[in-house]
Length: 297
Image 1 (cartoon, rainbow, N blue to C red):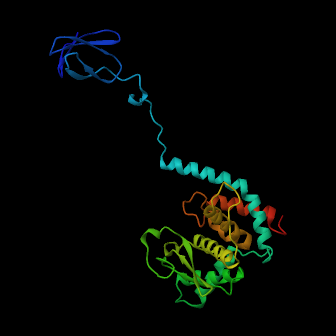
Image 2: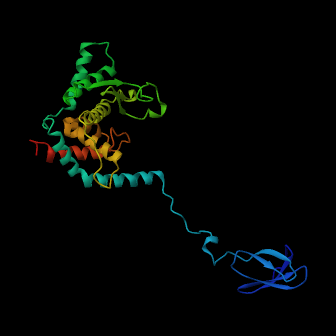
Image 3: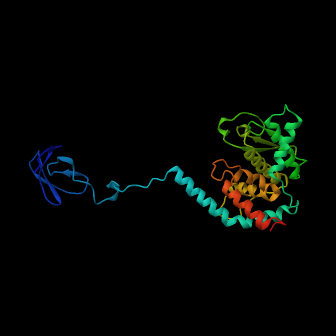
């Protein structure tokens, strides 16, 4: 038996479910039941003390969780989000293509396709014609060519190599260096001017920059033709739906091979030229050319 003094009381014995104390002020015996955590004991003489009676087994709030908690890592969260994203993509891809093909066929010939090789030939031409031309000129030339291909000749599009701080001011933004490209629309007197930012970090990677140009021109095509993507389902929010439909719009417009050229070589790459992952772009392009592209079914 352990005997010790604790704030005016002394433990004198215990049993299976109780602990017996003695008040050091009046020598009266006090009883505290086990398994109640910290317990306040009050003697008839007025002396009081807080004693510990063991882990509180009567109230779960006082129990320490001895079970090993499952910790979800960032990588696991990303994998979970990607899995959900893929399931939603597969669920809606057919209806999305049907909607886009019906929408775009009213404005242009869906059989018109541009190849990645054509874009590279343009880059070669500018090199042979002007030895002073730098890499940026190649992509400006390609952008102009694709702009015409998408029937956007009348639209004002300017290519820049530094991101915009806002729609009116050019400025370098350090936290945007990971972005491959983005489009800034600017409305002046009912006329819309578009600035397309391309990240110079990717100048040596023609596949990714050409695919990014195709994605940004798809945005501009939608803006210019008053196409607004509002999600028709509960699986995707409007922003997510708009970005996904923009990727698919690029394929329907005939630039699918440009997007596929990069995606097919980088299916597991973290850099995506739009919202859809590279693997999704590959699946979508394959589906479009095999089942939806007029004349290639």
